[in-house]
Every structure is written in C-alpha cells, then in structure tokens.
Length: 270
Image (tube, rainbow, N blue to C red; front, side):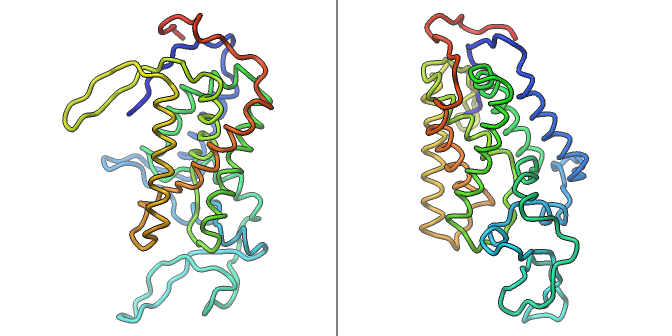
C-alpha cells in the first residue's frame, strides 16, 4: 500500500515539512555522496558508519566503532567489518570519530538507498503537512526530532550491543504517523494498492492505512526477536515502533488546532 494524497488541506504552506524534506535530500546526495545508477543509489559506507547511530556506542558511552579489515579463519585476506572499542579481541581506538551525540541527530537525516529516502519523504509530505498545520512550525520541528530520538531509543533498547548503524528518517516520520492517526483517523487517503501483478487506486481511511503499517512493524519486529539469526533485512522495526508510540502518546501535548474531517472536501488541490 502506497498513500498518494489525503483529503485534508493545510491553512498555510508547510514550511517545516518542506525544510525537513530538503534537509534529508541534501544530506543524502551531498553529505552521504549517494550516486544514482540503474540499480539505485550507492552511499558512502564509511560515512554511514561514522555518522549513523550505533546502539553499541550509545550503551558504551565514550567508545566508538569503525570499519576495520578483519582476517577470517579461512583466508588471510582481511574482510571489512564494523568493530568497536572495548569489544573482545579489539585493541586500539577508532580515529576521527564524531561525538556520539552528533550521530544521534545526523542519523535521522541519512538513508540507505534511493527507495528508502523516497518512501520516507513521501510519507512525510502526505502526513507531515497536516500535523505541522495542527501545531505550528517550531513545535512540529521539535515533535519530529523528539520522535526520531524515541525511535533510536526503541531500537537501542532491543539491541543494546548491536554494532550496526541505524539510519533513516523512518523513526521520526513514524512519530508523525502516530500523531496523524489520532488527529485525523477518519481522513480519506488515496492509496495505490498492489495485488500480485495488478494495481489499483482506492480511497481508504487513515486509521486503516497507518494502523496496518504499525501492526506490520510489530509483527516483523516480533519475528526478528524470535529468530534473530534469520535477519531482518536491515530494517529497524523497533525504531519505527518507538517513533510511532511517541507520536501516539505526545501528540495532544503539541497539537492545538485540529480540523473537523467531516467538513473537508474530497481531495483538495495543493
């Protein structure tokens, strides 16, 4: 399911939402040095490790992780691997690493590929502009960043010793989704539905789309916990859950101006 548009117009241009989208795009192409090819976008792996939020660094404050060539048991040829200060068998330090507090912020604006950033920015544009409208630009920026922090906290809580960078706006966007589903559960969302080789566009209520998405995150996250060796495809499900939960809990503290969905036109032109 891919949302395309909702039926709630904004009272003013969503400056903060657009600014966040631009910040993510600029970080992806300029800071991460992503290049577009036929197979997608290739990002700088070293940059990702340095500026992504790594749970191990957050639970072992002051210790850093980096990419090193580690010899395996089969061959003397080293393989690139993420190692962290303080781990068994690791000596020396990781030179030139940014402060861990900075990586918590920078990780929210980094992405693993072209589809990753397109999906996140699509959800942010469709649902973020209305949440911003309900609370104002400054409070929306704060709400967004706090949602991102909650997302990183959720992922770190589940995998405190993981030496894998957590990157992406998904957690912060999930906070926006959690807020939206409480503010506008009856909003109509034009949605693209794929059914095997066919697709169609239908109108669905926001609570169904976002509720289904959240249940998916819980289900996939639970499967990952039950079978940690099976791999989760690189998706930080508990970051999504943490961000969404933050949105559900704190949206009423931030939102002060909520529209009556029943009075809205079917699909306004932005």
